[in-house]
Image 1 (cartoon, rainbow, N blue to C red):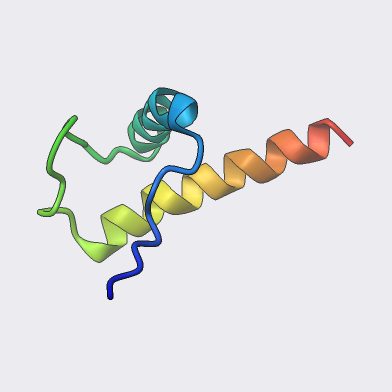
Image 2 (cartoon, helix red, strand yellow):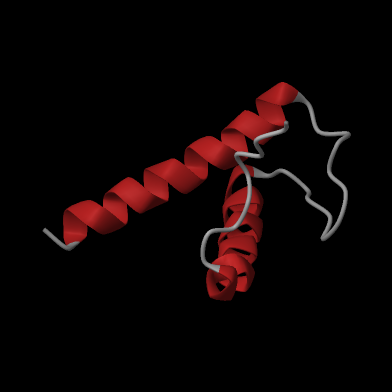
Length: 64
């Protein structure tokens, strides 16, 4: 039995999340494709994810 942790819980948010991911990748200089991105290094993928988390924290702090 497989438990996928990357499933979309709110399908309406999928497009916004993809846009957010593409914006974050441009900010850190990583080129992403709309489809398969399995050729990214761990460092590149981590920098995109880290940028996304950083922006989410900044947004949360502004709204406090």
